Image (cartoon, rainbow, N blue to C red; front, side):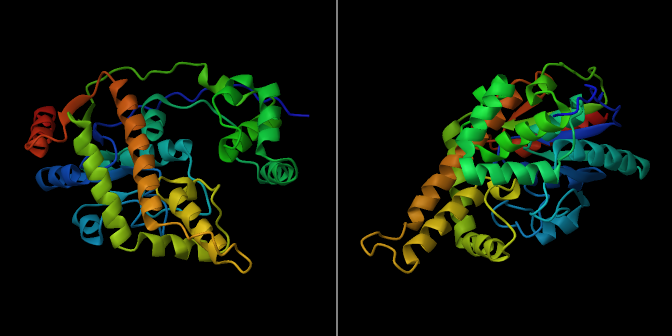
Length: 336
């Protein structure tokens, strides 16, 4: 039987004066952030759920060693891919870092595209029970016996709202929703019923890099994925697979690009396995490229949709020739 827990809501913590630079993937956030750092005394806090992981450098377009050395960066390479990093953890860590940076006389500059992290920091999150390894292991055993669609059906009985928005094979989210139900006795969907909006203030500036022409962003996404492949992305994923303790349902391995590369390598291995049908050709690298680019485009679309729901943002057309100059002017005006 689940043990009911009190339903409490974590209020957003007052934040010191800061800058925030958001935008879809491949919109030029890193270049704009470094330009700001050249003009103003800032320290960068990464708002990216993939950059937290060590050993995931090429596929996340992680800033180079030179870029990381040019200005202090935080919340990059802080977690092994085996261990998840939650939005609640980000909000806690980022809040602490912002206070520390301010105490040093610097300005916190939040940079990234993980919109749930921005939401957690700016608006707070509903409190939910932490991960329960024993229950998660039992759910995994059930899934191996019955399949994830059966667990999805169970979720539909106890939390139909959440089940309705999840695919029957979405193992990560189904497991978390059932875990919350079994631990707390309440559906995870109840955590989304309270609306919490931080009071508007003059202590922050949110700059949003958004393309006027979606085709420009699509071209950038394709160029970036091609560069990743050329720079050894597949070798990076092979090294992660060879560890032996990672699997494709981990949040780290579900990052855009990594999941598609993992599936591609699974297919390659299946074709090379003894007894594999000789007529079955190994998948082409172009298949991975197409799927990786398509997944990245979908991510960018979700990011832009979220940004457009933030009326306080200051929009800069990232495909404009003077985009960085526009960003720098907004920052200078804010700091006057």
